[in-house]
Image (cartoon, rainbow, N blue to C red; front, side, top):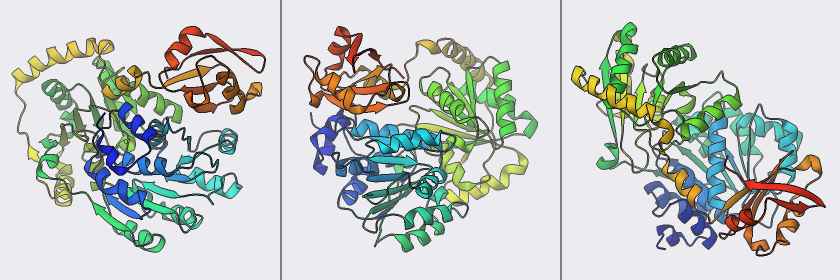
Length: 483
């Protein structure tokens, strides 16, 4: 199979994982960044949201991991729990066949469970700043073997409210560790920190060519504040998007839009920072699975959250932070996809729109009005689309991963509370006819359950022949993990 990533001389196991993910041709940022990180050059990378930044640092990090070394060798800092989990998932997918283990640690998660997990074999940690500082202070994470350190969404993480935390973390890293700063926007805060802690960093600015610039069509419509909701519905009916995100500036506004849309029978979800972590993760998971196709959100999903095939972004309010506008509209038009962003502008918000145009150096086109006939016809189509949501399978990448039997993730109904260890699971699976150590991938042992990756197309036949296996003289139930 011809995979363009092979030119980076990557481990064949990584190429195999990239093929399974349908990553065949590196993006512009990946072409520039991967070889630099492989040669351990510090980098400062400016590249638009949705350009493939995560894989650009995940691939070289996974390539350079020594899986026989149980110490943490890679550390990535992300601003939100959601983004941390997303980066973890990407690293796990890329490193699955190589058996690279990745852990995500963040606040509002039991510290004891994190400490236990870090004592196991963990090669890469993705963390929010507060929680990693907590572990450093408690001595529950060892950073002495860090080969790679990455700050994702660096413009946010090196803002004055986080800069002391970042300096503390950077001061604890080995001097020879390779460092990368990644962001869609770069400001003076980033430059100051980089000059202090990085060694002759290479600055990589991925310029958009005209084709890429035009991947997102940007528009605005003027409307009085009290008339915004009715206009919102007209936009949705006229555009008839397969999936969309509606951004508003405040939690109260987000909740109000959501309640009105539920009342009007839209298939809609809501997310904002005041929700519990579990609730937010649940909502994002359901949106990715297309259980609903409209998400009303605060800026919490504007950064880094990757959801396939968002065809439309609507800014119900003009963001006051110019950089947030860039991140919001970057939820659509990702990589090789096309998208549209429409901003509703009240009279008092016009000055903020002008500031955004000056900042992006792009002229946003005005829509004078929306044709009633287009709205009426679109409403019929959109209503049918909403009614058939359960039968839609929008997320193509998820389909690829689920349909590919190269790797099968197996669930076991025992864990640490039953004194089960990784070595016990390896021993049990190695004794099964047709499965060798080479067929056993990443193993995760939780408190009450465990997960095992079965490699090399062996999982399907294993599950067909086994509903239970014997581990430490106990019958343990096994099944495919569909989470």
